[in-house]
Image 1 (tube, each protein chain N blue to C red):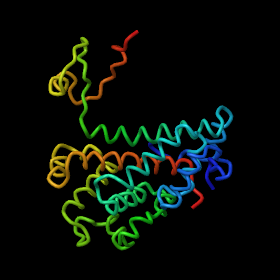
Image 2: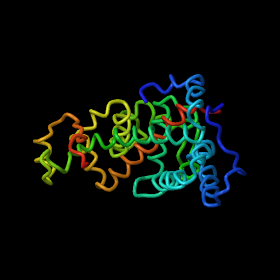
Image 3: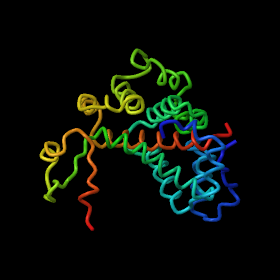
Image 4: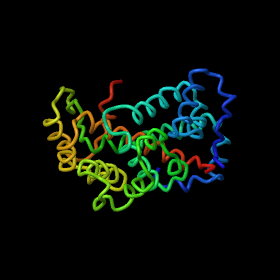
Length: 79
Length: 175
């Protein structure tokens, strides 16, 4: 995503040893559209709707809780 | 030549997808090559192409402005396939190459654009060049000229087509 020109034919030849062209297309499209939408969503300043202790919180409180830095909520994922 | 070969139109067996691919080519954008590449994943290609056609050709933001932004983003990405495409609808609406070029250049001082169009062009180029500059002040400025629904339409359009440009740049293009 940071340097699409680096993905040359040698890189794709390596991918083809592991994935079909249809799978490479699916993976590439997934990555590229996520890059576009993450950039857009990032400008909208979404904050998590749950506090670290699991309460539903509004955007203002969430901003106070999480601040400007992106935070992974992976550790709070349901088992 | 693309590293991922576009399917031949006759190899697309799903009639709904085939119709969508033909529509993409007939309208000029997103053209023929990109839809025939994503046709390799037919069940995902159908909603993807539908939303691209819907977001670009319909909605409540001037189609000509979206075409100027689309070319601006493709040129910033140095992506030849999408840079070379042109919307037939926008051309029929009077959009010229001179105005398209102005949108990719010093649009702030261009007489071709209204203040509202300049703000939209700024939104697109800052989203691409440095999204940290797409801040509350810029959204407040956008809201002076557009409804929130129109701002979201523009933002989704920029995100969608920027994604397509990165994809075609990485897959390569025959153009």
